[in-house]
Amino acid sequence: MTATDQRPVAADTSGVPLPLEDPRTAERMVESVARFAVEIIRDQRPVATLSRLVTPEITTMLERRAHLTRRLRATSASAVRALPSRVVLRGVRTCVVNETTVEASAVLLETGRARFIAMRWELRPRGWKVTVLEIG
Image (cartoon, rainbow, N blue to C red):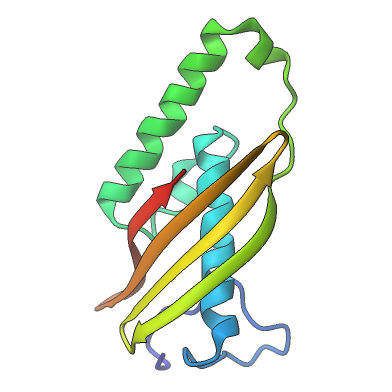
């Protein structure tokens, strides 16, 4: 990544940006997006949180899934009573395909449920963008 590129979502604690070749750079990018995406589809976070980092198609998909969650809560009394639980990240795997592409997966745990997330990051003229996001 160059000085003009978008920085990873979570910066290194030392304040020095990590090179893309360092696996920690890609892992930190993936961790934040994975957690935020799950919180968005659980309707606990606004879609705008990720709009800068994902393509418009992914933003639309996340909005649709958040809307479905709201509809489900409105029709189910038990869903309304259930308090939101914390999402716990259990693992991240990354693969730097080349200088402009990173593929990654993450496993997140919720109460009574595990979610698998796969994503593809591509370096675009305005910085890193998630171009594919699959949430299971």
